[in-house]
Image 1 (cartoon, rainbow, N blue to C red):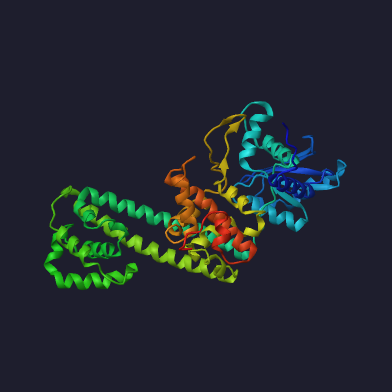
Image 2: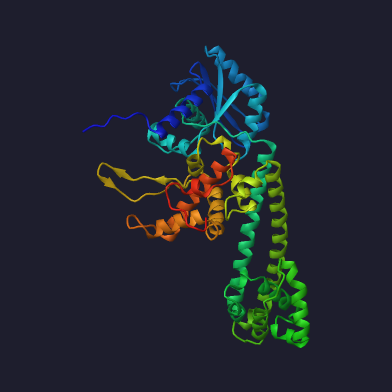
Length: 447
């Protein structure tokens, strides 16, 4: 029995997207494929059937192409076209420079995804050979097939948010590197120090106490600090703790570290040098924390300027900093047709694997922006304990009878839900609502 149905919602969105792209790339316009590099740029003026009507290779930088773009337009007009559309591969930063030049000249520019360009090389003649001249034609061909997209044109505020988000990600990664280095060093030369707390590197008291010990150790011997006596040691820890953002000392941890200074376990010959490196790592960590705090303050201030702070913080468990980190990678959410488009942009959309009666395991696509996946993944860990709707979804995915997910898989699914909810809140301009967010699910009483 055949069921006749109309286009799906996905079909309608795809048709609308193709229509928008056709408006940008009319058939009466030629397509100028550009392969951008550092000092050499290759241009190919092509029609929609892949025919080449002009080529030029110039030894100029990306910001010196006004004259060459003018030549491409003249070559297209001479070949009988009404104008040109510029297409390039969005690698590095040079495509942004070209976009500005195209805007100044009144030309439309589209971008061909690098992955499609890579695959198009083999599809062209079944060989993986690569050259700038060939890539320029392939880029133009992808644009002719509408396998391209309109590049993002952020405002100054959204562009600044992107850069601040990248800087925060760098600092967060650097903090993680410092933590792992400290753990490795202490496991080698002074393992007793790591046994003084359940999660020592996450404890502000442990960090402050370790900073005091490393600063006052003589010849790499932590036991030398005992000569200052317990009262003076307590005072030093109290003075150090505010530098790490703490307010109250957990004296149980501080006393355990004090007692561990006499523990001889570890490779003693390396203790002096390793503890010097631990002291330097603590200094680096403190500096990185201060820098990251300053960057986060600027990101939250930008959210205030965009009038988004009051909206995004209505989502329980999502802080203004966490939302800013996500938005730094997505850009303005209004440029996405739906929340699902944001999830695809992050590479968190399910990738189906089925044909006929066969139904394989679905995995996330893994495409899109990896830094966006990282930002929303970090946000999920903070949101789950405080967001009843997301917590209920996570519990349901972990305990349902059919197609039960692991904890990791369930958190990935919740990350997609969080992105969709953030998109709905910002684009709709409405506060987060538990009933709307839950959909057909039961909202637990805590919501």
